[in-house]
Length: 393
Ligand code: AMP
Image (cartoon, rainbow, N blue to C red; front, top):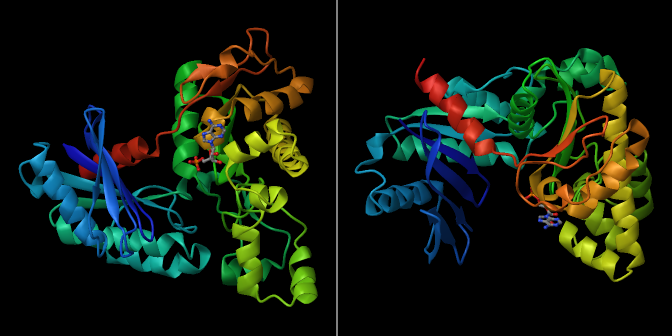
């Protein structure tokens, strides 16, 4: 069965087509600048990447072009061969603790949750509607990023604010990146060869979150009501003293929109370094002795270490620590600094093994009390697996 995994942004559409259950990737690519000037798409097929400039008015048009490309490249002969489409969806609120088939009620729930994910949920809804238009007979599923975190105990997902904020306004920790944490926590259990494990999964990319996972179930995670919680990120501040918000609004005469913009788009690596939100630029700055890049890196690493230590204590130990996403998979230096900071827990970095990028690898020595691994994440495969399973029910 051909299953399409889709990740729709407001002006982008990433896709990967699988032959399931073989989990064979047939084609992947991205449509970019949809609805904006200079739109284009890239397709990767048989190891070759092709880029084409093309006006893309909306997401449905992108899907239609995708069908044309699939036919042209002899991947399919007709759109009806794609039997199921799985959509990455960020916010599923308290209701969705697993992947579901999309119907009108799911879409209206997603619309209700827009206030909690103003950038992400509208894009997912657009993607679903466009796919419904083009793949008329296909099963559509919504794979929620929040679902994996639904198993957190109440004492971990509640904030110490008036209880009515939770009951009346849904103020609680939902967590994000759930599909990634689920993928790598499942994979590490396969590597460890057991299910009853305590693992710490570090999804550290431009957005970043760390989860504590016991026996395959999430018990705590660093992101919160929104994706701007927990770790310091590329341009997001993560955890700060919340009173900074009213203080700075008063001091600088900022509106809620303006301060929200600063804390989401001009903080983190970018805010501290004043140079870039990209970890590679920060690492270049560190090499050149740039004080603010050095500070940014120290602050970043400190927060990753703190969360790992917190979850280690909370779970009463850890069978493994996993690094994934942009920095987790590729930043040798960040991993080195984090693992050195964890030496008090008996973690012993294997410098040679740690020189890996984008590959599954054990990066600690045999004598390390906690084995630490790089595991490249694969959210698309997780989406395809869930979607295939539901399409076959
Ligand atoms: P993601 O959001 O998962 O795509 O991750 C993006 C982040 O990963 C950016 O901050 C990149 O700078 C960082 N990243 C990607 N490759 C490298 C690398 N080789 N070294 C350091 N950071 C990297």
